[in-house]
Amino acid sequence: MQRIRIGFFGYNDTSWMGGINYLKNLLYAIRTSENQKIEAFIFFEQGADPSVVNMFKEDVRCVFLRYDTPGAYLNKVLTRLNGRNHFLNFYLRKYKIDVISHSRINAEGVKAKIICWIPDFQHLHLPEMFSKEELELRDITFRKRILESDLMVVSSNHALADCISFESTSINKAKVLHFVSQIDKEVYQDDPENRKRRIGKYRLPEKFFYLPNQFWKHKNHKVVYKAIALLKNQGIDIVLVCTGNYKALENNDYIDSLEQLMKELRIENNIILLGMASYQEVQFLMRYSVSVINPSYFEGWSSTVEECKSMGKNMIISDITVHREQNPLATLYFNPDNEIDLAEKMIQKWNSYSGGPDYDLESMAKEKLAERTVEFGKSYESIVLELFNKS
Image (cartoon, rainbow, N blue to C red; front, top):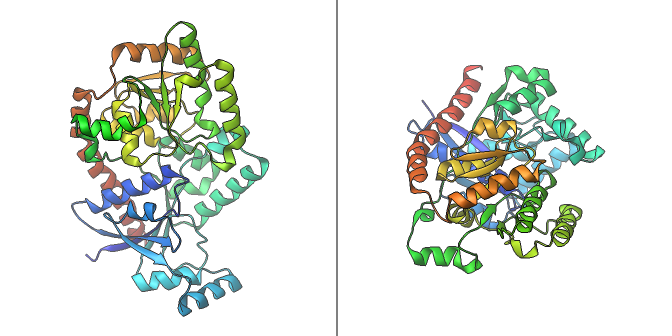
């Protein structure tokens, strides 16, 4: 059987690392599949961040959409004139692409089958996190993607129920695809020099909690800050390390409120903000923390939880439906609106773990990771094959 050629669209910058990591893990699972029924390509705009492009070179063929060739220019003009995506079709013909997967494009007139991906339906559950315009745009965009796609994927059973409730026609085309995160092999190197190079440069204490989420409002950093203040008032000085784009322009008001809360609670010395960190460094910080915390109000399928599952790292996470569905080992759940509940769980972990790996958990996780990755690849492959069997 001739391999099915699938095109993905890469992200042009690092503003959404969750999406980048999701795509990287999916492409890895495709590349390592035993049957190799799929050949993947990823399309980037010419000005894409080289650091993002480099993340994918090992797993997939990278193609750059060039705007400066006569053919591309003509097709772009035609696209503007009649709304049909002639510019994209130019590349689909050139690389003989059968399917555009995880599409987030204008699909009108596109000469390929379409699989779209909707990460979550957060706006249905937390409308207060969005402006009126954002809510309307999400409704329009999501419905358009569902209606224009041949099949679609969501990351959890919770998202599947939301999808069907949101647009009933999706019941015949929506599929659940649980993604699986990979762990960089260097993360497991235990020699002191490696630890010093990766962790020591940040001058972190021996024991710390780690919160790797981006600084978006629904990620709920505030409950962790309040829990730390409660513990500090009891004479228990705990350090929290955070990574993520702390100076994202669209989050300025929320970030200002976080800074103000730190000052009011007098916990500035208990919070270490490291800014953006590489995927590998995030995993090092996970491994050497006492515990990883995810206090989020909502997730489509948490990449933080998946990374800890793949690594074998204990966690403290908000008691939400998707986290229960992910079901990580050695985890304590807490009410995301209750800092007292979280503080109690934090002190349990603080007293039970030193900073660093739990080798028993790691061994179990490594054993399961290969099996989970194979299942991830097979699940995606079956979705693609179902699409062609329908034809």
